[in-house]
Length: 409
Image (cartoon, rainbow, N blue to C red; front, side, top):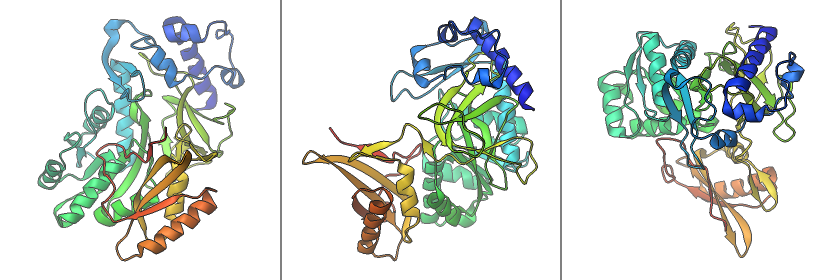
């Protein structure tokens, strides 16, 4: 789809929400949306934020009558008022179409058996994975979250060929398969993992154990859910579906739109969504639009791997730090495994940053601690307290792994 058509559809949606959405009626008050026509005009529109959606709780962004709403999903609400997102029947169909495409990009066919471990319910993931697989015609094994013993039993007995999960839970599965000597008993060929950023170390560990090809899938509750982008077999970026979505990359500090290839925050407009469309929604996810065409030949543009969030920055001793920086330091030290955790404390009224990291078998813990200390001093500019741990000592998660624990007062 060319840019002119995309912008035309974006403006159609802008005018629609300005008439029908109580949230956008307030947000766009005084803005001449009826006469706006150009991309430059569009970039003057205010961003939509998660706080806007919380302030609109429960259904203040709704753009269709109540009898058109067939389902709602919600964010967890762990950091404040939950966000409720209503869906029309057409919204669910559009989401299933995009999700079916994701499976096709990953090489999944109707002959596959897809084990769906993300949770079902108000969270979008489980139902999204199911709808796309059923539309494709694959066999669905909707195990949902938790109960790893049961997961492994069904994976083996039903001969699942595709695992869908968070990367954290994929690691749990891989470690249990290894621990129980089950590698020759399972039939997995592919993994589709999302919901959190995951780096090269965890990818290596999952591959070493399961020996499967895996794919990054992207999405968020506010924008349909997972299934709006996925990488292909060339793994050069996640193809996003620009016949449903318009993506911008902005400087998170200034809000300025950045050219393709430059890293910044992903901003999404849902120009086809009916029940709860969003205009210029700040996802807080950091990536870039990959320039040029993918070797696979797809017409869909690509987002690069998510490297972090603009709101996961922590400040220690006056220094701004992202968890991904610590992960990169660990990646470059031979002997560390994939799992790490950052603990922030106050000691004697001063910040203290503890970096806990698991080491592989056969390495010297003292030497790794010294290397981690030097790496953080050089890479972060601060002195940390390194704690080298054995494999399996850090907590595992069936959902998203908590990388930062802030105990400061």
